[in-house]
Length: 124
Image (cartoon, rainbow, N blue to C red):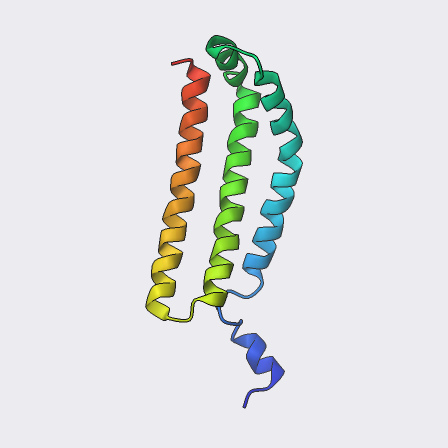
């Protein structure tokens, strides 16, 4: 039998304490702050041909906003899925494989999205 303090020191099932909680909140705030500029950028792209879209996306400020949005969203997605995996998958080997697959998937989505933005901004 453990005391409440003993349970707290073990940091719960994920053994990461509140750091994931705060990282998820931080990425949520970052995504929320970046969503308005991203919507404006998407609205600016409506009706443009490829050259017009490349001109808009080629601006450094626009590219930075989109890349920051992609990174914050992918990180938020990774943390959220990791928490679900750690809470609901009890087999340790399956949990480890799932967390690894989640990490690889989130990195792949972020890299593919950033590549697409950079490719579109170059006009190629």
